[in-house]
Length: 113
Image 1 (cartoon, rainbow, N blue to C red):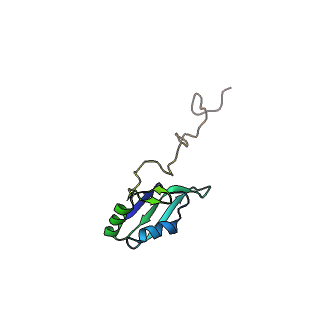
Image 2: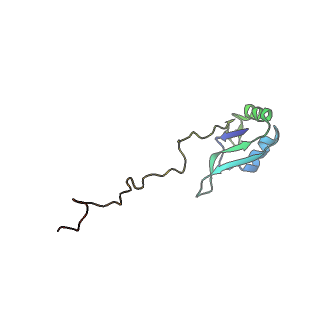
Image 3: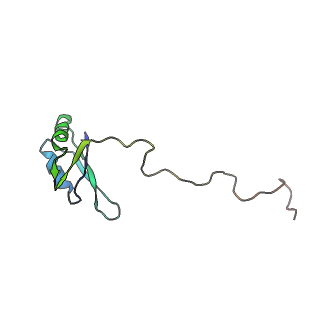
């Protein structure tokens, strides 16, 4: 099960988060989300636990617990909604494939000016 952990102090590391969840069972992966440019924690992360029972127990016991001075929010991670916020999609570009520019008057023949 993939678990969302929010309201993390910026100082919390993946190692600390893993230690917190290992109390409840095996941890497959841990990821603290960081700003692409500064490298600073965005205050949330994800923990993946293979055991469903252990994951639910971790969610129940850790949600609202004080971790590094902040009450963390812990719940089952929801997949990103389709078409929602996120990277990727093309914005703009050419709308017509007609080659652009002004095309005056008649078709065919030479220019008449």
